[in-house]
Length: 110
Image (cartoon, rainbow, N blue to C red; front, side, top):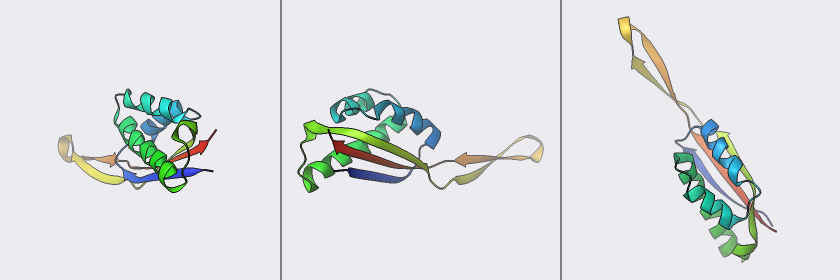
C-alpha cells in the first residue's frame, strides 16, 4: 500500500534536488534517512523532512511496520520561479531566477 508525503514551494532548485533524490530511490527507509542525514546539502535537509513525514503517515494512518518500508519513488517537480533583477554595469540589468520545487516521496511495504 503506497503512502506519500508532499512538500510544495520549497526554495530549492529542482535540478540540485534530483541529484540527491537519485541516491535514495529504492532504498529501505532507515538507510535512506541515514543517507539524507549525512548529506551536507539543503535539498537533503528538505527531502529528509518529507521522507520522515511519509514514514509518519504510514505508521499513523495505515498502521504499517516502519521496518518493512522502502522508498518506492521520489518525484521532484518544478514549482513557480521567482524573478528578480540585479543591477549590472553601464545601466544594464540581469535577471535572477529563484527556482522552487514540489517534492513528493512515495513509500511502500517490501
